[in-house]
Image (tube, rainbow, N blue to C red):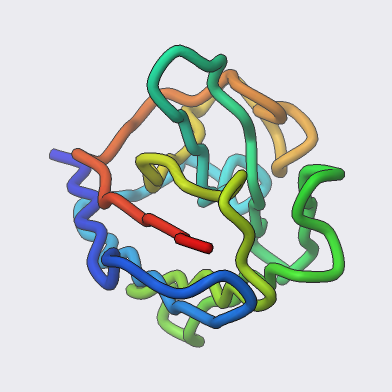
Length: 129
């Protein structure tokens, strides 16, 4: 029922910017407190890394490697979650997954960093030198 569809991936020069979008459908948490949508990335041979997340009231969390460079936001209807990426580095190259929590956790603090119940298929981001 929950569908998370990423878009916006591609290749970008180091220092450049890229915007990812997650189209959210069928996501109906039992309570507002259970709402959280986020982004997780994984590069080949590396561990998964939580990138950013946003909860029902717009509060956000960021991984320390991207804080200050990436910004997560959502529209008022919570149908689209955006990840704005600036000053991209080769280390940012990864598959980026849109994720959502499940009802057993409250806000994003409950799911952070890797306790997500729903995953999108991912979109590849490549930052070259």
